[in-house]
Image 1: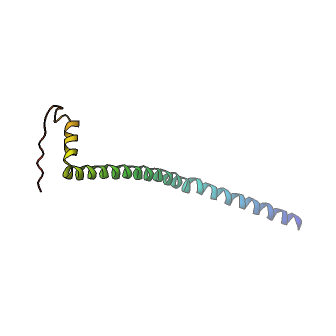
Image 2: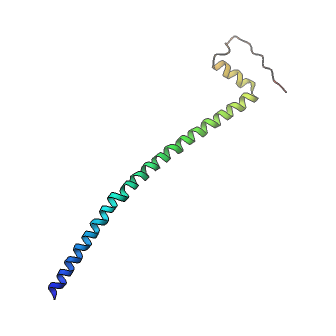
Image 3: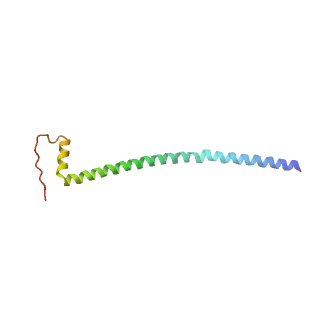
Length: 98
């Protein structure tokens, strides 16, 4: 009687070990690559969000400069001198349309 109980216990333990091995194998072969892919996608997302932030800053800068070009004659002169379109000893006449 006890020998049968012992055999059942051993067979149950062996069965649990086999099931644990199958579950572990399934984890390694099926779920682990998904986790690596998820980490890679999260890293790509972070990089893209950073690039989006940089593009937003550049867009804001361009909008600010565009506004200043339209409304500030001194800014136009500053940029012209900065890009060597106007020399230091040249005079500038700015026509403002009202």
